Length: 523
Ligand code: NAD
Ligand code: MLT
Image (tube, rainbow, N blue to C red; front, side, top):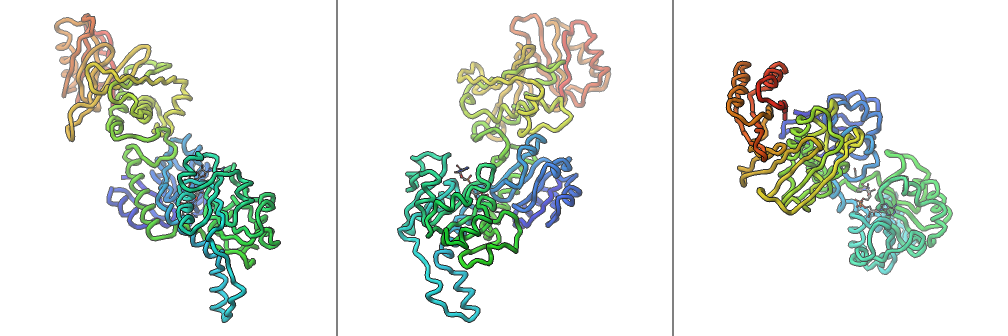
């Protein structure tokens, strides 16, 4: 059972799912950074939305943390590089609220075009002001989209239905993709100069912070209405205030602010602004989706399984053909580590058969997780395995070959001293991992917790002597595989035992006549 600390309001369905999976859910809303640092030790998972700042200080205090789950999209409140260095997985729910955010964008665009909140406010205060709140149509206006990603694309789709002309600034997408969306890609200055409405759907980062500033406002038409449902700080609020006050642009609608929560801003005194307290994702549907998605991802992460929405795992997409091999790849990595008295400087990971070319990055991470985890005091995860390998000066090469002589799929790890190969055998629920070769010996062993690998001269009596030594020490052999070397002069035994062999027993086995090497493996 893991302790899941939840510091913001998360849909109950997600929390219920975590409890049903056997985890303890500890909800503590509204914590300061220091309060969070005080309660985070002992938490294995942390669930947040956009208000909790997961800083280096918080991550330093988070001694047991495995995963941070962001029930939403933006990760600007999480120090992802520090989390990665600490081996903490960061997961978000990247599509949970995109429709809600796109609809909020359309709501704010219409609200600022037609002065809906202003007219409402006037009327409920006894003023029937028809000419004062005259608006403009969206039809045949130019909408500039800054950031044509998931939400930008949904907004573009909806704006097309209103008969708007669409232009966009997004240097990271192709013209072809934009064209298929009915959008013309332009430079930032061109978008600003041509647009009647601009909507921002960018991530907040060093490149985009303060992007919309006084200089850019001077390039806009006076009729421009600006909508920001992305992140506060991308628009400079001081410069926006002056642009609205001085009629440099016509209006703005903001869902997000540089500092949140905020209830006071000079912007709130202006007649040509519409504001909302970060409501882009605040719909029943988005919250249900975000809660469920993050619970599912956390359950996978806490089980040590692959997590599809992890943002700091360098694995790319994992196909259904590759995913089942992750456990055996990790076991091979761990097994391989125990074959080395001193860590090798370089290893090669080979993928043979159908696995070759199937997107095996995650299998390399699995091998490294097992290999490095076998000798590390600190937790090694899919997240930090490449960094730990680099820090240890371990060179990792990958090879893929569609050719596999004896198995449909085979994973082989090689160093200058040793090699081990493994695969999956069987079908359906009978699929099982198998170690099928160690060095140049063919074996057939199911990886189990405690194993002894013994290499000996290939002559009668040695197996019996090893069995007797184990028996005398009350270690039972539960399975055994013996493989002669290809040259035929040595043999290799892999013995599954009902517990770990003691150091003393290892010495006794090593001292037996005909024994060449003995390795104790703990998977
Ligand atoms: P996304 O990653 O799918 O899209 C972002 C797009 O911006 C990408 O196409 C990328 O190429 C482009 N981009 C990145 N850097 C750029 C730059 N410097 N210049 C121009 N283009 C750049 O993200 P998304 O899911 O569409 O989310 C967009 C924003 O909306 C994020 O900031 C997210 O945090 C925010 N968001 C807000 C709410 C809310 O409640 N207000 C809800 C959901 C998402
Ligand atoms: C997001 O990035 O997903 C949004 O800001 C929504 C939220 O967390 O409320």
